[in-house]
Length: 307
Image (tube, rainbow, N blue to C red; front, side, top):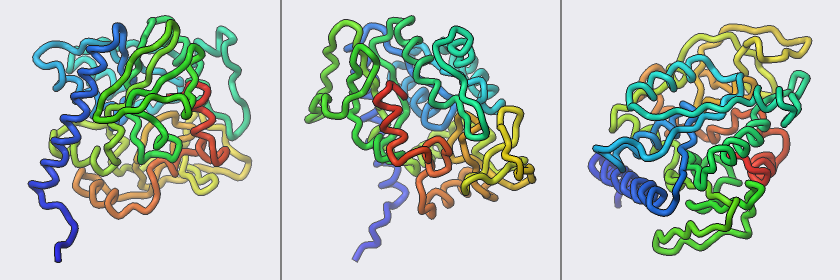
């Protein structure tokens, strides 16, 4: 009997199949839409997506800009990496800020120890899509991230309000994607839909991609809140009993620092991260404090136009 484990050659072949599928999707976007944008956060999934886009359209430049919705509470390591990568690959970067949405009265800042700007990004994103007249927004979401993600099509239709209705999506038989839409509507497109977190890390290793230092083990002051380790920063409103303590941690996902949890880890190399991901028994988003607000937190945000 076989072990069920892939050999190194089989794993590489599998990654190349995922790569080819994603590149096909990226080229479909370029062929079907007039003003697409690639949503770029500086995290591992968007790094892989940008790399795949470069492969899809080489030797030419990327045919669409990168769009980052900045909460103002991002990790500095992520922003530094974002700017360095954009310069390196010669991409056009467009940044829109949640703080501007707050200043214009488009959204109201949350207050209190459990406040976060993560959900406020939705309005900033929809305003940016309208401003740029974007008809497609490419994202790095994967179906294994969270149960609401698993309901997504690769071409995910959004109505004139930017909202997602899981019951109003098109069939995608034989990888045939229908990008037809009415004026004011747009699509979110997810070329990494069939990838897993482990696939992402194996691809990063295979392609030798650089990633932010946050993903590797380091010592950082954190507080533990509802079983989540949150980075201590000027943006975090502490509870009365909370005091920061140094812990050796790393992040499985990067985002708004006020709700992105760390994990205790000694993984300081890609090989050690791979071993850790293989043995993990919880999803990477289990460390996101904003997902704990309700059992349907992600789905509620997606219906409003979230990423």
